[in-house]
Image: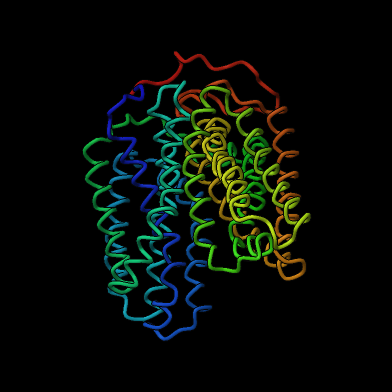
Length: 422
């Protein structure tokens, strides 16, 4: 089924990732309120984020295999319904232990929905528009940072932290209606056995894709996590401009996901990936140079401008990387996407750990230096990977009879005629 202008299924999938991203990141904006209301320290309340991320990373590939026989529309619509219920119940949590358990439940549902949404977008889109479709769905995650989290933080201050989860539940209910109404039924394809799917996931092309995602997340998100010390070392402006810098990165990141999808369709997966990774490293190097030349004295406008150049490729690599995971997974495409998502969350955790050590030892500029090193390692790994296991010019429906890449490079594009119609 070609990607039709005006069809609502793509917006429904974008709304799906938007509510997942908002629910994931909103805790950071309501920590003081949760801490005060439930009688725990902010450090303890912060473990809600840790538990969500770990649960998501561990459960994602497992749940992808476990739900392989569930029709995609039923999985997405039903999963969104469950996600809405969990958030409405979360608003009624009366203790920190109950809230922690509900965050685990939310992470389990989110880990099921996110890979399915990307896989469905890749399957329903025409071959020459796959990257654009995946980029649109990925934009939901960055929009959650730009719109969802600030709105939730404001709502928490006005009406209390439970109101933020009610709001997420309402938006999720809208996503239920939207996907139920617009998402077409997708015919079941022959189900590959669990053992065969796991064998496909152990192939070097898939594992290298996951490793690339882990390294890219580590290097690309490290400065974002430690935006306060990084920008303070660069401008000397203190912490009162951190919100503005984060907003700049969020807006440019949202634009980057759309651009990354379009370039994937125009340039192909592998070329777009390497350009995006190179852009991230180049921008981080410029920030490091600016800090080295005039530590604490860089103009705010200059730092903001370079952060735009960093944010666009920093989030723009999401569509081509997901498109590559779709192809490399072959008949286990959804599971490959889930494993790739686990690599993303592992990379975020690694960025927090490595960046924390760097900022303690060398300050914000140390974070930039370590981020550059991780970015260069990412480029090296992915340059070898795309040379050894090149992606086709257009990503096709990997749930058909298209095999996963073997250890022998195959540079022959899959004809568009082999894409299944739905």
